[in-house]
Image (cartoon, rainbow, N blue to C red; front, side, top):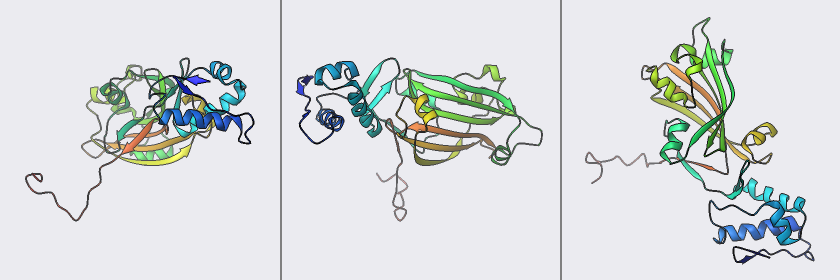
Amino acid sequence: MMLNGSPIKVDSGSPTPLYLQLAESLRSMIRGGAVRVGEALPSERELSAMTRISRVTVRKAIDTLLREGLLSRRPGSGTYVSTRIEQPASLLAGFSADMANRGSRPGSIWIEKTIAPPTPEEVMTLAVAPGAMVVRIARVRTADDEPLAIERATVPANLLPPIEEIGDSLYAALDRHGNRPVRGLQRLQSSLASPAEAQLLGIPVGAAILRIERRSYLASGAPVEFTRSAYRGDRYDFVTEVRDPSIRPTEDGGR
């Protein structure tokens, strides 16, 4: 039983469940480079034929590696060895621009795009006037057709163009109206995917996700955006620079 010239090791006589044996064998091959980052795995049917174990057992092994983040599933395409996206936590950038800068094709699967009165929480967060309206948008954000995040954003309606003119990029729509945010506050929290989130993102229920709450502001200090997102934990690393506060940079930048 070989994959890319490397053996898939499973032993039906072992007390270790077959799905755990298969998961460990595939894990070792991935970490050893026998199966490369970005490469597709054989289908469940093919792996079942190669190992002579049931597709149910193969699926359990694959789901184990999906939860660990070693694999990612692309609907309609297959299962791939994961590549991770390093996202600076201090960068205020829209998803579309970020993916385009990485050479990927950004996209959206729309869930909601409506104008409505604000909730009490939105009134407090966005400092909207009594009787004002807000635009609520919710979508699955994709890169090269792979779902990566669920975003739910609320913006005061007077800061945006007509709702039918809002496309995949919220920040581009704000920019056209001269209301692009210049700073923001983000809160990150690790969590587990709910059944609804797992279905939208194509990941197992209970897989790791990163919940991000963002509040963004105009140069004037006025609130412009209140967004809650769920990012796939198997695809994203949020990184930030840290400094020793006791050391001050020199005027020439330390040169």
